[in-house]
Each structure stands twice: as structure tokens, then as C-alpha cells.
Length: 274
Ligand SMILES: C[S@@+](CC[C@H](N)C(=O)[O-])C[C@H]1O[C@@H](n2cnc3c(N)ncnc32)[C@H](O)[C@@H]1O
Image (cartoon, rainbow, N blue to C red; front, side, top):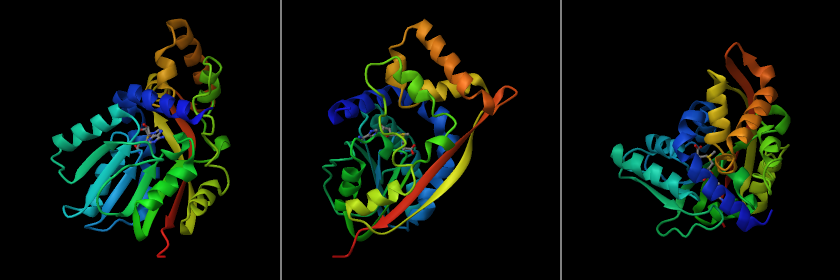
């Protein structure tokens, strides 16, 4: 897919998903976000960039780590996501958080370089992840570190059939390279290619719990990357994709609830001093 089109699909897709995102994914993504934050080892007073910040789930946790003297700048391609995060910052009285609408590959941010950058579950959607990591590197202090989390191997993500089910009904694929970074050492190699040193990575297996079919369907179709395509489906198409998706996760059903396996990869790298 042409990269401009991919950015537009993501931008307007996540605009649609913004209102349903946290209900569908907050608990499910928490282990990956926690491992990424633990790996980044943020310190009080640090200035942190949160790329593809979404509603700010990670940004607000960054603030807990950096305290009142630190700051977080969140960036995201979706205007709705950025607005959502800004609203939460005002509601929570977090004056040391700011949010800007930028694609990850070109963030025209002013001010001091960052001590650390993080990106949770965002790089799979970016047309050129090495470019995005290069942009994070550019915005860091020498010696600063970047940490990222992505979905892992396709075979270990029990919800993965969502993409072919939706792609069969739209003219261009929603996320063409979604699982590419989760294969083998691909994420770590991308960090190295972007210019990071001391790169390391680890994998994490989890279960994504949903109390009902309705919760699992809402997370998959309304709160995630296929939300734009789904919003254009008529009722009959919606019923058909629901049935196919539920069939694909049937093996993970326990009574009314679902425990769907998932895997994440978390990597970290350091901006070389020279
Ligand atoms: C799964 S959400 C992750 C949000 C947040 N990091 C978290 O952990 O909750 C993916 C986010 O990536 C953003 N995104 C997709 N493509 C992007 C791009 N090219 N540049 C920046 N953000 C992008 C979406 O708008 C969405 O908010």
C-alpha cells in the first residue's frame, strides 16, 4: 500500500476508534506497556517523548515515573486521540503533559532534546518503522534511550484473523505489515538500522481477557485499527464479520468469556554519544 494512503487509513481509523479504545484495550495492553516502561527505567525529572500516544494510557504512567519535575510530550497521527489525551490532561490537572498531532516519521517538535522516548503498540501501523525510530533517535539527547512495544509473532496472537476477515471486504489492506516487526529479531534489527546502540529485546506472552463475545467484538471492530472499514460496513456485513471473527476465536472461549492468547516484543536502544 502507498504510504500516504496507509497514514490516512490509520489517521481516520483511529479517529473512529478513540472513544472505544480504552474500554477494549486498557487491561489487555497493560502488561506490554508495563514491561516497556520498566525497560525504559524512567527517572524523576526526565523529559520523555511518547510516540503514537493514543489516549495517553502510557503518557500518564510516564508522568508517575518522572514526577512533578519531569515532562511528557505525546504525539499521535489521530486528531481525535490527541484531543482525548489533552482533555484527560486538563481533567487530571497534569500541566507537565502536552499532546501534539504528528505522524511518527516527522515530528516537528521544538525545545530541548528528550532524555527518553517510548512507543507502545504504535510502530506496526507506521509505513516505515525504521524512519520512525530514526525520528525518535534525532529527538533524543546523546545517551538517551528509546523503548518500544509491538505485537509479537502472528501465530501467537489468537485474534489475528481479524485482518483477513476485514481485508476480504475492503479494497486495500488495513495493516499490510502488521506482524512484520513481531517476527524473530525484527524489532531489534530496526532499532539498530535506525542508528541505536546497545539494543536488546524480550518477548512476553499474555492472555487477553474479555467477559463476553460483545466485549471481544467491540474491542476488535470498534476500538482498533479496523474501525474505519467497520464503520462503513452495512448491517449484513457487520453480522458476517462478527460471525467469522467469533468462529476464529472459538477455541479460546470459556463459557461466555474469552481468553485470547497474545504475544508482545519489547526492545530498547541507546542513542550513541558521538
Ligand atoms: C494501539 S494504539 C496505541 C496507543 C498508546 N500508545 C497505548 O499504548 O495505548 C495505536 C496508536 O498509533 C497511532 N498511529 C497509527 N499510525 C501512526 C503514525 N503513522 N504515526 C503516529 N501515530 C500513529 C494511532 O492513531 C493510535 O493512537
